[in-house]
Amino acid sequence: MRADAKKNYEHLLTVARAVVTEQGADASLRDVARRADVGLGTLYRHFPTREALLEALLRTSFDGLTASAGQLETSSSPGDALVAWLRDVVACANEYRGAISTMVAAIEDPASALHASCVTMKAAGARLLVRAQAEGVARTDLDGADLFALVGALAWLGDQPSLAPRADHLFNVIASAILSNRAPQTTAPARRIRTRSSPAG
Amino acid sequence: MRADAKKNYEHLLTVARAVVTEQGADASLRDVARRADVGLGTLYRHFPTREALLEALLRTSFDGLTASAGQLETSSSPGDALVAWLRDVVACANEYRGAISTMVAAIEDPASALHASCVTMKAAGARLLVRAQAEGVARTDLDGADLFALVGALAWLGDQPSLAPRADHLFNVIASAILSNRAPQTTAPARRIRTRSSPAG
DNA sequence: ACCTGAACACCGTTCAAGT
DNA sequence: ACCTGAACACCGTTCAAGT
Image (tube, rainbow over all chains, first blue to last red; front, side):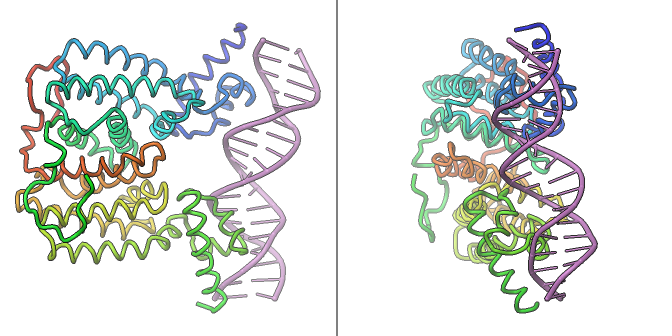
């Protein structure tokens, strides 16, 4: 990469970080280019899609999460490791408001610049989940996709201004649901009276 | 309302229902007006904000949910009533992709056309929750705001194409977390070893 | 190689002019 | 009373023209 191009790339990333922090993942790309004092085409040259820009912004966090998953697998008990890692993933997704939708969509879109990172994260989570399930401390009716979906739901909560204050508490509620060796069939406690069609599973 | 105005209003609602079903709650209002063969100003006259249009589209469902809450309070066991009603609220929010964000934002925005409906729904849910808690079949560390937030998270799952297939299953997982008389302190099972800072609550 | 910004096809929102 | 659509200020995306 030519020196001037590299300088533009770095500067765009710095400005984009500020703008996306303020306006969210759907921030105006025009605004980013404007505030970076760079032509609009230059932004598109370095980051051909919005996903590519978001991926560059989250790169460090993604790498940290992958490393963290490996460490937790050996340093903590299976239950604690899983919950601690989930907390970190949610925090990562919450770095930029609105990023989580793009991330979950990327899982099924190999063309997305976020695809690889998200697939890697999903796999790392699945490993921690299987380990916890093997020890009998996690529900066995969940898989990696379910876990990723729950992370998405929790990250979404943190993105909503009116719900963000409850996000931490609800993380604990859902984490406690994951950390349970309850059998799938006995999920509904108490009465057996059912006036409406009962749930499938 | 003048006859021609009323006709426009009804026709706009019909067309909007189709467009919003296709494109989601953030559909192009221009497109709605265009497909309704009506001037753009006419749409804005009848529905001054996007929230107003969405409210009109969801009106029937909102009323149904309020009525349903009252019936369930007397016809079903507290646990079953709560879960059945939550299922209906999530289904309502899922009628239009992306509607849930507007709905949760409306809770804290008295100026939103959706404010009253959402506050009413939150209150109805809180009543069903308190009733279940009094019978010892629901977690006591949840309140109406938490319940509304969980509904939001579940509705969000249903809005994401890649996660929607898991939405039903995850509804059951989260419902089982709500329907539990576990004490807040004992949420984390198994080991006590903690290598990371432990959660606040 | 890389940068620039005009050009195109879209938005949401407002409001003077019409009936 | 109500309807219309031009006008304005924005987008995202592309690409010919420049250095």
